Length: 68
Image (tube, rainbow, N blue to C red; front, top):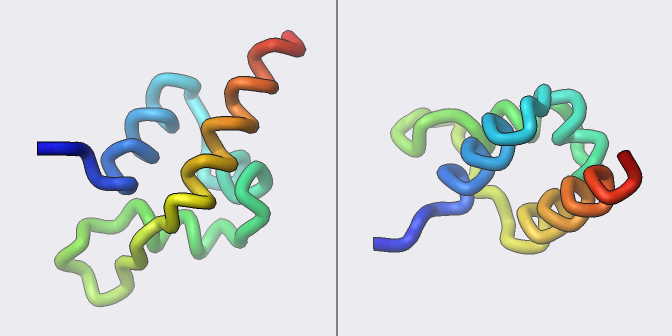
């Protein structure tokens, strides 16, 4: 079974030690939006992370690491 965008987000966050604030800045969204992406799907406040946001985060993380 393939990973959900939420699971991929958690994996990226943990691998790179990112905060919700950093993720929000990289994706161009609010910290509240990132928090809603990270909530369990059963939560009434959960929102699915769109693929475009996940792609942008992966791009930003990759480019950030190249500049270090």
